Image (tube, rainbow, N blue to C red; front, side, top):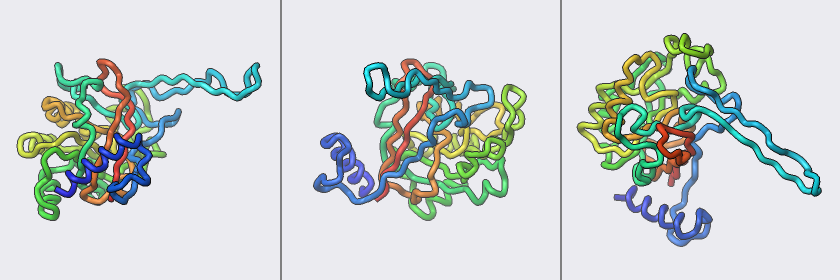
Length: 265
């Protein structure tokens, strides 16, 4: 109940003040945490995807005597901190522009498997991990956003450690090594719990060696979007007040760049 009340107060304050919430009466005390990596030429993308490019249109004092800068960017949908829309792996499901906002905003829980992932780069978050979380915290609340902390964001500056390979192209895919969500755990979540979305701090919801991407297919078949390459999950408690995940609104897109933030009381 407390999380629900906090969400209502928080969202109401944002809507009423245009995010200038410092002095809003009744607004909870807390901290905003950015869960997003920035986008630049060294941002990590899937080995077969086009990386982020930023070209300068103008930057400097123009002929009229004032400073002006403008740039143009290009990139694949799936890279950096981004969202996988359900249509990415489920025909007829929501494209990124059609994901309801209520699926992208709400109370979140965090499952920390970083110790297990540190010992095994192919670790897959299991049903047991969720049951252990519930033994400490109670049942995963309905309409939660689930965040999985593997600890992998610490390797973000090192493509080889983060992905398991620094190669590009199709040959690199077979060498990918990073943790993910086990298919049976994805099925357990969709069949036994009611979640809005799921995210983690690796390049894919399925672990690096996945061939069939069963966790993607299971979640997205139920219209559950995924947030990938998230960061700063170590700054969140196991239960946090609210997550706001706003992707670029690409009409008909299978995903796109994501700015995801959390508010912690």
